[in-house]
Length: 303
Image (tube, rainbow, N blue to C red; front, side, top):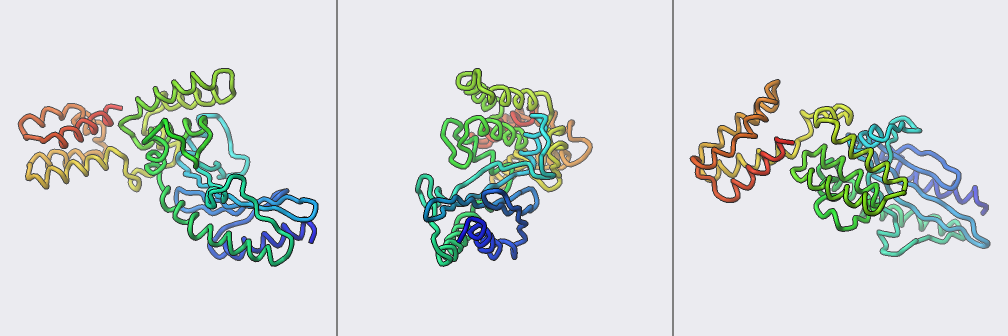
């Protein structure tokens, strides 16, 4: 088999797996990429193939794009997608991560090798890719992955510069109560590690963009429908309401009313009520956990 034949046969194996699922293919000079859009997610799975003296070597990888994060990224950097609606990947995984091997490559000498590779890729997709796509299916999931431990490496976004950019975007979109801390921490990383490097300008540009745009403005740019996507503020409010109900504290009604107002044109008034609501803890006999949760809610409302 020659190079073009191997590439063609590999593409057939991927098509057998992915076309019935709705993926579209795009041939490239050294391989092929398959992509699928689902709600706010963009899935991609591709392979590359290299020609050696008496054999061919191939490997594959998956990418996951979260549209709101990627749209903000492109806007902040004044960039336009080369391919319409292709805003790139937020996270990525190589099949070598699945096998736990560095630079894993599968060797091909015969047609049987190609068929066997098709079985391996199918197993990788079903056992690893699908759960991966399902787990990281929201801005909230990306925020938690990238920002819960900002000092720890994340293999799915292992370039520090892009991790900082995507981490801050997801934190701001998710109304993460630790956003100001994360911004200061990541800004320190940029200052100490990227001076004189092109990523310095990119990171600082995104930080300035996020600082100069409100949560509502970012949502419009990202195309987020707030009737569908729950913010961290809404989630924490719901959590507080449940805690108060479970401990038979009538104060839950106050926060239920605020939650309802947040979904109306009185949103700013509702936020103002939240900012000054800590006094209720004194006469409503909040316990430590309830006070702590309300403190986090007030911090988010004040962003």
